[in-house]
Image (cartoon, rainbow, N blue to C red; front, side):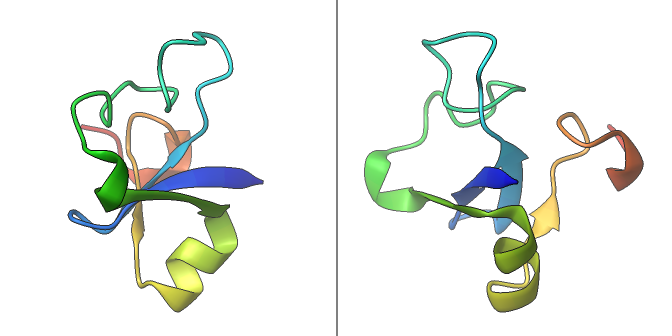
Length: 64
């Protein structure tokens, strides 16, 4: 599954497909600059970038 990695917070989010104006499902990266995010597979973000999965995007990630 393709996700959006916020490199500043090391958090990966689900891509925002429901809302074309949001990069992520939860909208957490709406105010983040383009230099701090990248599109990457969720598994790669977790394995290669040591990122955490967003609790609002992934129900099994703990939530907020």
